[in-house]
Image (tube, rainbow, N blue to C red; front, side):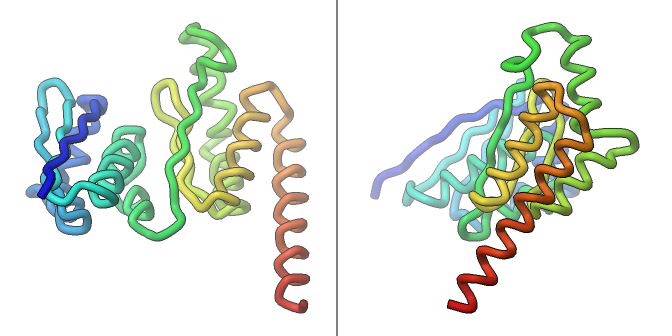
Length: 184
């Protein structure tokens, strides 16, 4: 029986969320994946131990990363469902290391009172988290593809209205394709 260890570092301010009230989030991740999480609260280092290796430890790693990137545990737990993945976009790839530019881009993706992010989530079915230097997406491959494209358009300076129109077009294309598939 082979034992595996995976390591990941998350921001210190997300460690409390990962542990959860009375350790409930940590316990739930361990239970669902058959792993053990060793969390260093001071440095944010997380060690994922697994006796059987394989899928459980990788799932735990993705859920820990998602919580570290700003998702609530409830949203991160979607990664336990089949065909759901985490995709992380580095804002610096679009604006460099300027903190002001990153702040502006975070604002563009979130929109006023969270409206743009919420619209993209509703229209694609994906979850989006804007945290630090990243925009992260949880969803199935098609949801991630549409949400990623919308976020990249925003980070590249596209108008909010153009991005919403793009997502609407993609969504109606997807609907007509699935209707044709069901009919045929």
